Image (cartoon, rainbow, N blue to C red; front, side, top):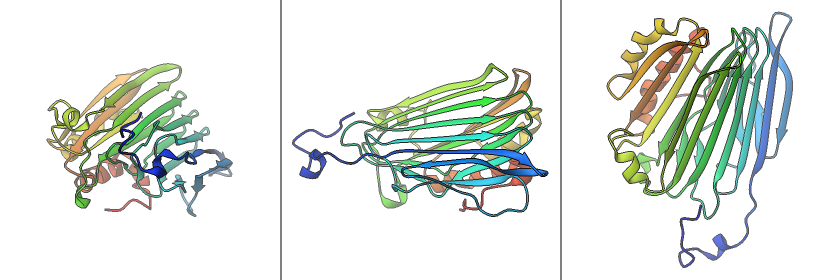
Length: 283
């Protein structure tokens, strides 16, 4: 994807740039009565750190040392939760996707949990800048009896900095399977005219921040009233019985990332149970 005409490009933009190609992988297993690190792989700008903890779940922090992404960058994360384990994954900071001179930034996320494993994928927000081009793919495979809490929040420009996102490309695809059966799939696409797309009432009605939260676990309908109280009028939530388990899906939107966080943090804290929120999240 190329948003800048040749006459608008600087000399630096016309020069070939080094692109990020990074991958981080983490696997946990249950040993001696608790969740412990089983395998760790880090390549390129993808780093994983685990704060010391005496209890469950094991917490992992993902770090992109490149400081953000732009056109042509590739970043992949893989998280595997073994049987009877509990792992919570977040990011050190918000992932920033900058203007793309050419191509698009791509992120691939693969999550899996074995029988009775519990996995929480709770990255901080992705912030898209004007003329960013970004594609994200999330694939989740759960065994029977496994549970997953998955959240992704996206912010279109930093309102506090006076930024306005007019043009760009954003593609987001989720595919969640449990015990070989599809339990959730969705695809979101916006651009190249962000202003028009996001301004539609059926999309964000002019808001600049949104989040999707998915819980796959038994008896999700028991959480529905509390979830709707937190989400309020700027979003919605529903719960179903699907594939032998339960599914709760919530969507939130707001004027900026900070306002969105004020509802997203208590929502994730509620659904994450005794684990609460990752240590590096803060308002």
